[in-house]
Length: 199
Image 1 (cartoon, rainbow, N blue to C red):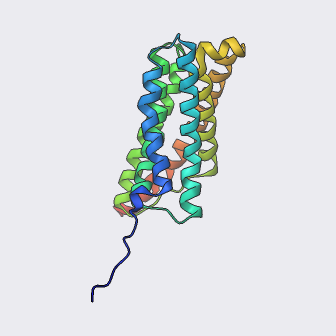
Image 2 (cartoon, rainbow, N blue to C red):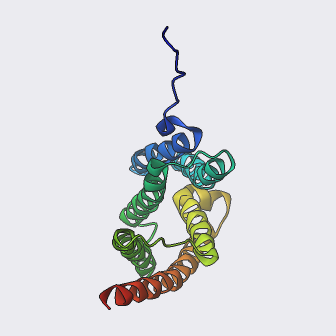
């Protein structure tokens, strides 16, 4: 007698991971829309896609925790999706002149920190050491995403809310300051583990 074993649904297709996939798909969409920086319609669609992607950054973690949908694939892709979205948006905003002059340093600081933390996490993973996300790092992410959303609106946003560009740049500098703080915090923690490993 054959026993029918119910097929287990792949964790790769659970809701939490689907939200992460959506964020990955949003990256080339936002980039493509920003190739027309003077087109108000393209700008607003880019803002809508970016905001939806930013919301999934919170939702996928919430769904994974609440409905026990955490998976190795999700843990790997989640930070990758976040960094790709931020890095691609920053590069396109620098390319079209929305971020320029001294504000380029804020973008450089944010990008360098993302690379530094990624490398640090990869090294510590070999030591079986986790790097928990601090409360300040969560605030940094929130400010960073709001800043980018405001800046993506660009000239279109300026026509609706005068001073929109200045607000976005101020928030970007605030995100860069928080980025320096959290980057130093992660680096200090990582170096401590490196020193302990060398002993």
